Length: 169
Image (cartoon, rainbow, N blue to C red; front, side, top):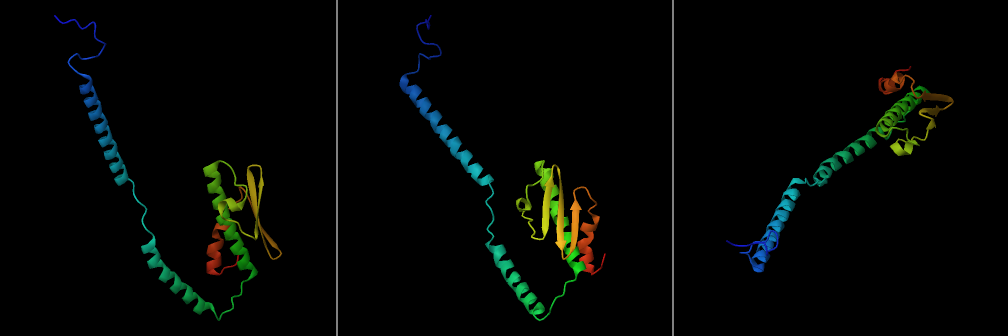
C-alpha cells in the first residue's frame, strides 16, 4: 500500500515540475487563443459607421440646384410680410420652443435654464422661468404674443397652417 501522507495536499506523485510547467503553458496558450477569438468576434459584431461621402455626393448637387433655383426665382421679387404673418410666425416659433421645453423637462425632470440649452434660442422670444413653470413672450412690432406654461397650445400649433394658407386669425 502506498502512503501519500507525506506528500502535499492535491499533489500528484506521478507528475514532475516539468509536467506542471507544461500544463500551465498549455493553459496560458488556450487562454490566449480564447482571448484572441473573443476579440475577433467582438470586432465583427461592432458595426462600423457608414461613410457619409456617398450621401454627401448625392445631396450636395441637389442642395446647390435648389439654392440656385430659389435665388433665380426670388431674386426679382419683393416680399412684403404683414404684421399678422409676423405674429403667426412668432406663434409657430413659440410652439416649436414649447415642444423642445416639454421634451427637455420630460427627459431631465426640470426646465432648461435657457433656450440655448435646446438650440432654440430666438432673438425675438423671451424665456422666463418661475419655479416649475415658464413663459414665452415674443414682441412683434407693438404687439406681444405670450404663452404661459399650461395655456392651450392649439393656436400656437395651428399658426403654421394658417400662415401657409394665408389666413388671418
